[in-house]
Image (cartoon, rainbow, N blue to C red):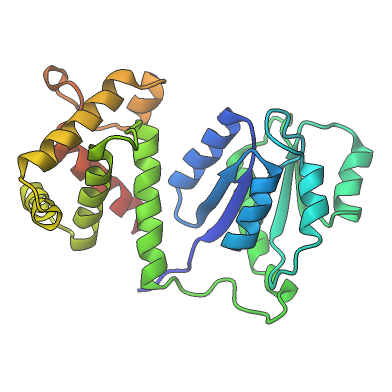
Length: 268
């Protein structure tokens, strides 16, 4: 059965911890997809123009990024968009007059104060999703924002999810084994393949190389991420399968099967 397509969101946030929190939140659910993440107001505007998100999560201050939330809000009003994205502003600013300005001058839909005890990425995203069904009347052509997901959109969503998981694990994109891992996990998911050896052999054929030239680079990339991760505790939370310490990090078979099972379960 076809599923409702996830809400496409652009995140404009310069705080690394906040970005990670939103990414982790999105990775644990299937109803949202970040199509752009940046700490720059200018790049955020480009993402809106080229990737046409349904919603924007905007940090008002951007103290460590480029530009500001005000710059972004001023410029987006000049855009000729078929669908005006839902805008959620996050801020540390306690000035109530500024809060009122967000709604009156900039037509911001939601404003969330980061200093509140109940603030969380889930709360922000849940508000956007609740408002989604009411946002269609802001479209010139009144399209259905909750249209079914096409096979191509599902394929792209799965591939982006795989990339996000490997980013969290810390697999460096400069390693040849990174793209091998992405392809192997996708094949396991797409074909529901249980024999990883067959997957590695298929990759060897399609890439015109040997089986060892598939497995070795993947193992090297996995081991480098396992041994040199910036936050070992976060890594163990992201990768919860047992690992035989004598082998270093997970084997290529363990690694690809873990993520194929994890993503398949989340998308059921």
